[in-house]
Length: 148
Image (cartoon, rainbow, N blue to C red):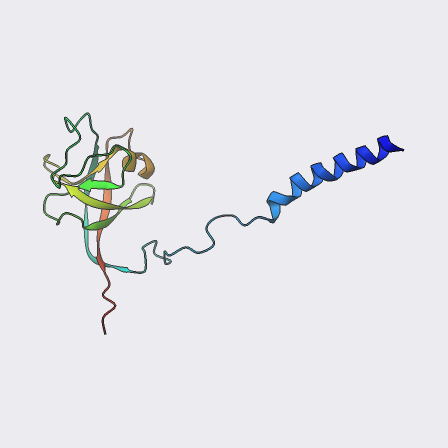
């Protein structure tokens, strides 16, 4: 009799462990991004098309960027020739549609025909690390003023 009660208790515990995660919500409950994938506090100010490449601490010969920030291989940062430091841009890999918002904190690229250099981590997330270069769309984002 006690053996049956113990088996029932174990069976109920296992069922609870199996069913409980299915009741949990998946993903973020409150996301701030709109349908275009941009934080609603930002709007697209300008668009560029061209080639993107990646760089890392090793290829940059150190960790210092033009803005004075430390370069992080996995950070969501990039180098651009003319955009002001701190500018947020959404970079979309045109070969697979993946995009990521990065912050400009360095100068470059210094190779003709390239418009942006992303960190190696951002290139990995966009799916072009192994290729080295890809065609991209760069959307310059502008913070929307809430003043009336």
